[in-house]
Length: 406
Image (tube, helix red, strand yellow):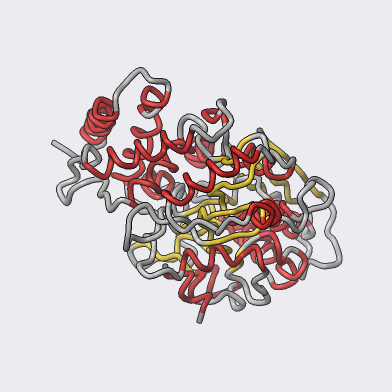
């Protein structure tokens, strides 16, 4: 039931050319994939590699590379790792194929909430849910007698107390790297204040009271961060935690497992998780819900697509989950939620519930416009009002070019 509710609601490369004993078949067709590079994808692609003739490119810049790579004919990759926030360009360009026939032939172990349908066709297979939620240093909170914050006003109060105690370099971390990450942080806060990105006629709507409040709150939080926060992406924040430099961050659930990896973390057992804080009284946690999964390229021979799907099913099976249970909140049978998953689960089951990130053409253009225009606010070159106006102007130009606005 819980899993059903959840579902509703630099580069690293590896390769393998020899079939391994744990794969149910020996793959003899070359299959390549391009996905993000966090731990869950490493586990999935390692399992795919056991089938042989498979190579994976794990790259945090995957979202900018996939559209052109999948538009090539033949496609440069057979499998794409996507999310509800990155699949839209591939759908719009028609560079991924419906999977109904392959699901019927090889997808017997998939559950209904893994099947991502667009206009009735199965266009992706979801493997995990993800969301940004609060991670915090349990030992520091206990030492200082602090309560885990549930609102952003409380986050600021707790951050001030931690700063005064001087127990870490910076009380807060945040995924505020210029561009996509900074835009997503704004999206979370903007929705937390009840904002709407665009109207029913696709005209922009971010220049609003919610937009002003979101920027003001984000600016206030930066007072407790590393001054270089505009280069801080998910890996940067993960490493800040692992190296004991920060005490709190609203970070992706998929990063939780790395906190307890003794090979790279100095804070094993010291990081806890809780629901993403709310921005306003009675509001939903200031975040969005995501799924991650796989798609198969359209511009490849059917034989390659079939091999790719079979390889993908081997990467998304129960054996993989049992060996990587801590790496994600899996939608795959065999998953057992652990302590680090509790924050994401609390976020996804909150009442009211955060929305799922919209997989629409309008949102893709809006996200890009926000990412392109926000820097000027945080560097002090524009006011909040000027920044929001610039976002709307940038979005409008892009929407007209895309034919979404006249």
